[in-house]
Image (tube, rainbow, N blue to C red):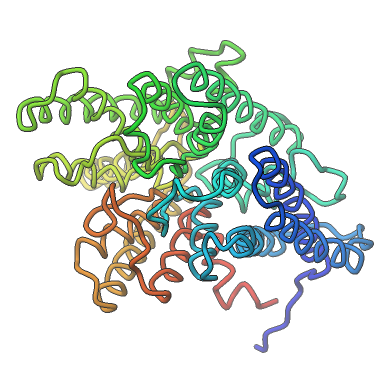
Length: 486
């Protein structure tokens, strides 16, 4: 049967045009930062002109057709293309300023920002203009809650259905609806996101950080991104600042639906949430184990050992990637625990990346029940989560996700190994990119960067970042031949 597309391309270009216009507004804030710090304005003026110009031209050509809605295919295509398009134009300030003259490196840095991975090719961060550092942090903040979610939140006048965009953008286990209207849901999510960001800015500013560093680190924390304004990440800041960042990293790694419930004082539902309990348990148990190990084997003081272990566990589990200690020089069993955390991820519905804890819980529950089903083959024993039976389709989806995730991880590791990188660097870079973590092991350990990779390797890792941010299926569906058939 020949391929025949039924995709509404005018609708797709209309939304992408708006996204470019929208991105130009964020880029324009860099002009004010550059002006305030007496830096050259031209990189951001040029970036805004190019992005806004192309957005307006495209909107003029495609924006007048407002009657067609978005279907599933359009939704998946818009989300996939939006991250690529935003990253391409988001790289312009790096190129126009000369901060990152290579297009490959600039794109890598930008998509790492938007996908909240935090993997960087930069070795000297503090020499960059503050306006560039600000934009670098801003890419995190925009990508943290999602480009499309932001779009749906504040511009429902586009006249298109927002649910298809939101489902493609946040393809978790089950989309939580806080409000019957999808725009109201998106607004509530972003409202909580903004409130937390402002709170962290004020608390960090109350410490030794100046306002600029407070803003940049708050953007990176709430997005679970990890870009810092300092070469040594968070290790150069005081214990006070580190504890504040620990708290907000942990908050960012929790399902934002639970934050909404907390604001409405529905605490019983929060404590009953199995993923939340598992999330807290993992943080406490692993932090205690590593903390004791640091006291015994690294002879650290109790407070510093506790702080380093807690910071590292929360940073890696939530896929933020901030660093206060070089965990790669810890005893083997300790950094192997940190490496294992890279395969967990934050909670579903959080800004964290990775596999997500809820998928692990469902897989464990289903595997345990398979033993019972083997003994009682005729019994109907459903998997239950938070007191409710989970449909078999969701279980199949989780199993498929795990299989595909492992296959992609293995393929990425093999590909990097074929390119000549050692095994630890290959597995470290692959899981750190696919899980949107940033630091890994080997050559991409917590005090290293990604600058040494070849252009081909950087494009591969960029693709893995995008796959991980959109939880595999959104991109893979678009790449499948069946997607393009009628």
